Length: 138
Image (cartoon, rainbow, N blue to C red; front, top):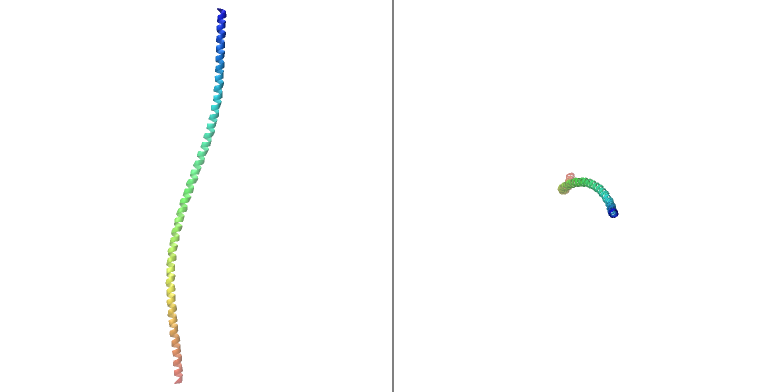
């Protein structure tokens, strides 16, 4: 009986030793898995930090884009204003050209009238000279 009990205890001890070895092996596998998970957690934290930085960059870019869009709108308004000024200057130039044409026509008429008056004056001077000659002859 005692020997059988000793054999039973030894068998139980062997079984418990094998179970302990199995549990130790599982514990080692779990430790390795835990290290992998810890590595993944660190990677996720790094990626989260990068993502946060990218989001901040994106916000900065949005602010820059809004500023550029405002500058473009101001430039377009300025361009529209300049185009309106150019159109007004073109209308003024047309009016000036029209006025210059009128002045030019008036100058031509005045020149023609002066030429006519000059002929009349010359004719009068010739008549006056002839009259003086006739008067001297008297």
